[in-house]
Length: 232
Length: 232
Image (tube, rainbow over all chains, first blue to last red; front, side):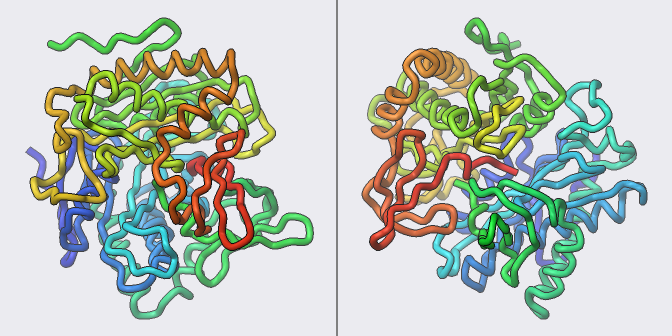
């Protein structure tokens, strides 16, 4: 019998194995629950979702997606072999050795940027096992056990992610966007390269002060807000 | 011992219980596999993902999302009590009795609208069990077992969804967008109402010939393409 995952103060866990933790978290949040609950399924890959009760309007609160992403990078940095590079796509994908190895997802009670949402949920998935043995040399998609992380366990990563995310949350509440902007920008995949996002194609210049994507196409620079990533 | 799910010719199944079928399908597709594979986890809610190999550019191929959505409505229409209304949000949410009860997700090997993708994956999740007993009268989120569908089993719904989706696929290949446009428009939630999608707020007028959202704000009507919904 394994011990259940341990979470830092202010966070608590709920095992929802067999269900989609992201969907279950949305449902739980809509029915009313305390913020700081992490729903998880550790039965294969890592799948978890954190319920938040933001105190700021949605346009700022969506920063929880990159904040949780930096938490994933910190957790992998602490637990994975040092030679395994971890990067984040603006749109939530998590890359290990350049391959897509998981993703962050975000949903909220409202899609109105100026409203303070009743709840906001950030989900994280990390693939541990490759679906087949035939992974090739430069696959689009990868899994941790194919990238030299054979000693990693989903539960350890969940606990580490929760701790690093809570630390990031405290810093965000005290110091605002600048430290998060700096940390995230340093991990972002594809800056300076051509990209298609939300139906627009251009060069990914970087992120603005609210962490929106700056996309230059021709003479125009578009700003794609993070709220674009809110899921149905 | 339950019999494994049965699929119609051209489709096949792979049980990935404990993993996220949508993530597993992307990984499997990127490594190369035959189109028509459905990965599924029936251990709690219904979670499944269909791998496609489109023959048309991404801008048209993303019609697989509404096509699979109409398949969900057809399957629920066949199996759920007749008084249970099912609607679809443009962005992939599945509504039962007005509450969000699941969602469709889409990902592809490219985000370039003009490219024919190597692969495209549509995922579907349907919540069967409510996370808590306290569902309230008009919750934002709901579950099938809270909506009078106590006799439904995830496996039956998976099989019916596969059959109806294959039928829709054949019709789409033969007759193109018009029948799909008509079927989907008749099921769409929120037409004529205010909505925020992809960071833009306005009135949801309907969908164009490629099933993009027509969103009127002030004197301008925006077209939000379905490719906007492609996941990281």
